[in-house]
Image 1: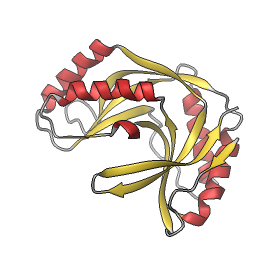
Image 2: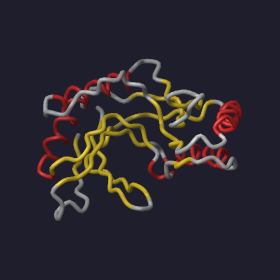
Image 3: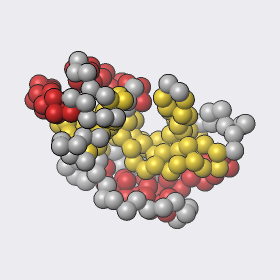
Image 4: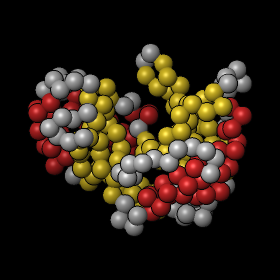
Length: 201
C-alpha cells in the first residue's frame, strides 16, 4: 500500500530525495543516549539529530518534482511483496576505519538478509527510472555522526568501544515500510519529511 504526502513542493522545481527505513521513537531515544555518552569527549563531530536518525536504503539526489509519483509507485511496487522483517542494532564502528574515522555508525544485523533484499529491490526499480546503480557493495549501517577532523580521534575510538560494550544490543524493531524521504538543507542542518510511505505486505 502506498501513501503519498507532499511537503512544500508546489513552489519548487526539484527536491532532494532518498529512500529510507525509519525507526521507532524509543529506539531513536536509545541511540541519542549513545550519542550523549560520546559527546562528553571534545571531538569534532557533526551528530545526526535524534529526529533524523534512519537507515538509508537508496540516495536519489535532486529530482524534478513531477517525478515524485513515478518514483514512489515504482519503489512501492518493487517492495510490496517483501514482507515485514526484524532488524537488530548493535555495535559501533567507523568508516573507513578506526585509524582515520570519518563516519561513526551503529551496526545493523540482518540475519535473514531481508534488508539487503529490500535494498536490491529498490535499487533495481530506481535503475529502471534512470538512477545510477550504486557501485559499492551495500553495507547496512546507521550513521550516528560525521567526524569533521581527527581531533581526539583515538580517544573517540576508545570511548566508542567502551560504549558499545556498555550498551550491548541496542534494540530490535520490525521493518513494516520503506519511506521516500525529502530532505531540505538548512544552515542548522537537514530537515527530513516523509513524501511517500510504502507498506510491506
